[in-house]
Length: 244
Image (cartoon, rainbow, N blue to C red; front, side):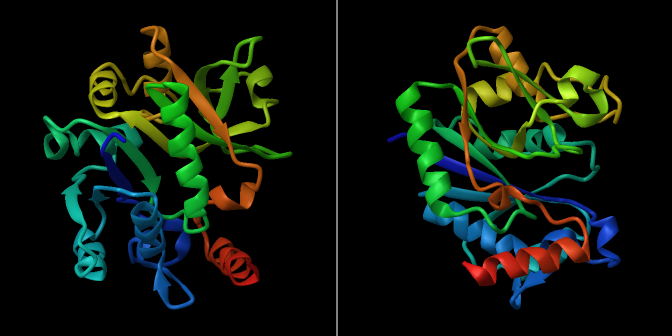
């Protein structure tokens, strides 16, 4: 099996958490959100785990210093694509797949990630996106497919047409992508969009345009991919975790 390098996006400000702490070190049941995500990465079989830190990154590093993880810094928060670019040097010359996780998504089951990895390998895809469906997908990037059900691209809410906004299958923000292909595609993304940010999602469309095989893997339980942006969502996630 190919080597697996995990990048955990952990640079967020967490403005809506009503706190000056980095979002990923808020806690559920006394344990920082990012530690749940590190556990996910470890149980999926990651050979290396890298945290991409930003806002008050020293606090994230302090909270995780005993967990045998590595760090790169995103000095400016210019989007998810820009965050992943910061890890290029750290992974330079290495061969394998890159699993990209979000440091504020603690409810993902390791079994789901193992299944995603198995599907990715067996399908022969260069990149696979973890997706789910919401009756009300407002705010999420939409998975745009052709008539045969093959993914074409991911469109962010702010950039979606009215037709695209009706799509219920959404991007979870979790990907597994061949390392070389990932960093090659990142060289072609731009910030020409509504947010003026470098979207990681654009990598999917770029790979597709180059004729690479890109897949999707749908997780039926959409609570697994719910990110945490507010104190209310933190409490909801704690309730879900405790009910399992």
